[in-house]
Length: 330
Image 1 (tube, rainbow, N blue to C red):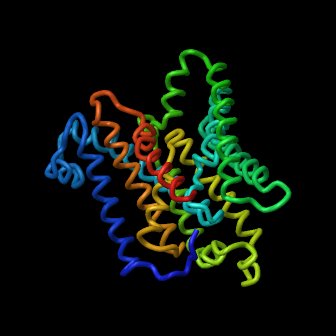
Image 2: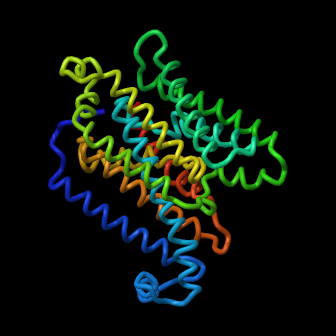
Image 3: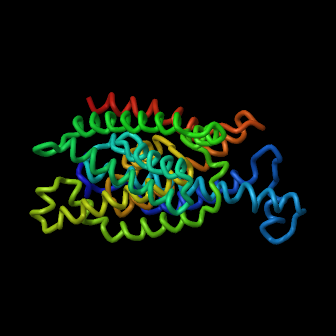
C-alpha cells in the first residue's frame, strides 16, 4: 500500500458528512421500497406517529429492523477489511478472502448444529474467526515475514478448508434445518432479528479505533519503521487481529457469510480520500453500511416477491472488482 500520510484530496472530512447523508437516504429507500411501496408522505406519517396499522407494522416490524441490520453488518465487514488492509499493507486483504468469514461460519454452524442459543452462536463465531486469523497469519509467516502473495494464497487455501468443513456440517444437519442454513450461508438478512447488538459493536469498534488512527498510519509504512518511531507494534497488531475477528464474527452471526464488502469499500475509499486511517476507518463503516443496505434492497425487489440472498448481490459486485485488483497488483 502507498504511504499513509500523503495529503488527501480536497476537503476530505466533508466526505464523512456526505456519507452520513447518503446513509440516511439509503435507509429511507430501504424502508420505502418493497412489494408494498410507501411514499414520502407515508413515511413521514409513520415516523411522526401517524399512518395506518399496516404501514406501521411494515416499517417498524419488518423493513426498519432489516435495514438497520444490513447497515450495521456492512459497516462491520468494511471496517474489518480496512483494518486488515492497513495492517497487512495489502489491498486484497479482507475477512472473506482471508478465511475469517469461513472460520466464523464454521463456528456459528457448529453451535447451531448442537442447538446452542444466540449467545453461544456468537461466541463460537468469534472463536472460529479468531482461530482462522491465527491460522492464516501463522502459516503465511512461516519462519520469516509474510508477503502479500503468500498471505493471499494461504487465505484462499484456509478458506477452501473451511468450505469443506461447512459442507461436512451441512451433511450432518437435520433435513428440516438445511434450507435455512444454506440460505444463511449465502448471506441472508430476512431473519436478522434485532440489530442492536451489531450496532453496539460497530459503534464501539469505530470509537476504539479512532485514537489508534495515527499509530496505524505509521504501522502501514512497515513494522520496522513503526517500531523505530516508538509504536508498540506487537500489541497494536494483536489488538487489530482480535478486533477484526470480533466484528467479522458479529457480522457473520447477523447476516451469514456476505463476501467482498470488506474488499471493495476500503480500497475504493483510499483511491478517493487518501490513506489517513483517522478518516478511512469511519468512512469505511459508513460506506459499507450504505453498500449492503442498497444491496439488500435490490435483493428484495429484483425478483419480488421472491427474495435473493444479499450475498449473491455483493458477489456479483465484488468478483469483477477483485479480479481488477488482482490484475493491477501483478
